[in-house]
Image (tube, rainbow, N blue to C red; front, side, top):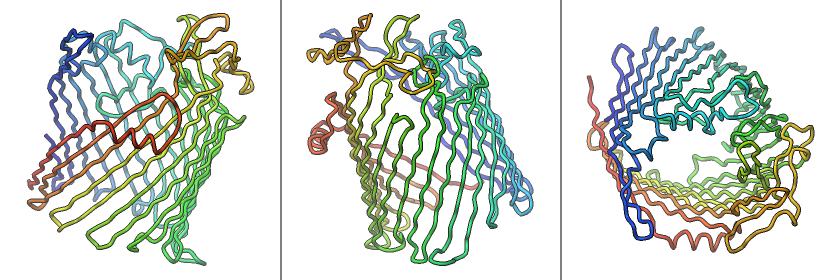
Length: 503
């Protein structure tokens, strides 16, 4: 159930409530069958309020989310039984909304078994177990984990030429949103600044020109300076309505607290990249765009190239068709493979990854009338990665890139083709699976939208997906596409109904 709206006095309200049933899977192991619960009975709730003051010059808001799970099977102990988040936010503008200050504060608390809270502490969002993070430690007796965060920003925005913003973002190590939201990392203090310069009136061969520069830094809660980043970009439109934009990025030598998957921090060489895009006039019946990206790492640590294009055709005002291919090549010298060895003497295995990716995106939109429309989206995606030059991390904080790892010799590393497993002999004996991969996927959606009453809509959706994997690491578009469309698809049919009413 979803309820949303805004009162005449400027109060916006949004409520989302969802209840999902318990799901059981039938498992067959060598003819012996059993049922296991794979998803518990779960309730999700999101509430949001926001109040406008002084004709919207000041805005105050609050948000609350809750996830509650009825866990009765021990195999689901890794899930939280409850997860709560709350937040407050504000924004104030003055001098005709030229200047602004805004911010938010957020809090979270997750509860569950000792297993689930231990896994939360050691998850990739925080890695409490890092041996060099003296301010963190894993407590396997905890049954709850609280966290907090916040943002404050100040800036200037107007129709004049100069704009800017400076901000600080804080996320404590325990902050956790992933039960109902998405959060890649916590344990971070971010400080960022940007400045933009606009030339809005036509001059020379241009209608307008926008220049922008950014500078930002990351720290963790141990006071460690993780990275320093720079960016400059431009966006302009010619008088014939063609557009060109691009950017240049530079990241200085930085410290990764995640690359060793819970191991010590490691120094990563700096890198730089740039991209350039050209778009023709999209108001025409037929238009195009082309673009490219190129990146490289210091000390030859990585290089990447990507090329994309788009064709857009509108034969009538009610029909639009687009086709967008994208092809990328990436070579990474230090790609994580596995962690092996004993708990007190782990061995972090890496390899050189050569990866190629190709995908096409197709869209068709047909507006039959203002109340009825049909939309189709389809994307075949193919990626293959080949690993070579396997190595282990030896000194993650060494002064030069090559001193941070040891390359295995052919005598120390052999591939067993019968098990597709590498065996390593370098004073100890251990093995790891061949990490080469082929990933193929097709995703498509067909949506029919009918606005049967003003503001009230009925959606009919057909979604089809196909996914296949392999381990040879060889990129072959023809054979990969043939393999992808030979497998049995998964089809989902969905009906969505909404009704609008005024209070």
